[in-house]
Image (cartoon, rainbow, N blue to C red):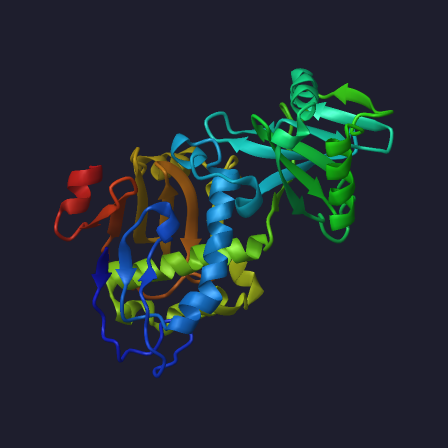
Length: 363
């Protein structure tokens, strides 16, 4: 683990407290296999009480949705503690649990049976799922069944019970209440799950059409954005300087990471998955900083706005604008800071255009 040995007497980068002891704060979440740490900049309360739950949400968002199909992520995925995603299919009236296929840029339904009504269910993505489930449930004592309680939120259609097959003899029951989950699990163990149920297969309900996807997790998308903004500010502190990270121009971003307010700062984060309509040159620029086997962070000024580009697992992830409007002064004077995180080795390299290391790496 590499630490940036900044002055322990500095006030906390986020809450401003100068009395509480500082603790090690990972620049990019430790769960992503990183080792670059701020040592004297973030107090223990902000680190453990405020940011730790946000980091959990971000890791779940990456593992359960944006990079769920990446081979280096699959080994860490866990439906219950990392969440997944769902999309509403209007034709069937069902909430279908999904994942994002990053290579094809498509939403792909998970293997599941959704109980649309008391007498009707749908299965995705193919009929053989029903046969697999029926056969495995003949030996219900061998099943590993977990549960996830989820409600889509105000103004959205009610979520039905879904039985999601995550692997051989491994299931997740998604329900809107503990009572519903208990009833389904009881039906599985008693062999009554399919009694009186008519099942229809929906092969690919989201093919060739846009769909809104909702993250299924204990927190919300704002918490994910707060964690991303926090990582961006951390990187400014580690790669540029603690003084720059504490500049008043970043006060809104720091406050958003700490408290979620001002709410409009959530728009500072632009996820790569939302960039299907972005100009080709922008998407190409993001890809140029991707390296297989590495996470990448870049801090530079773009169109008068200091920004941090974040790529995870060799794929575009997010861009963070650190101020809400263009500045009338340059903060960096043309400097560009970067870091390559080798997440398998747990090492990293800090790069800059000032010493030529950035050009040697990326050209």
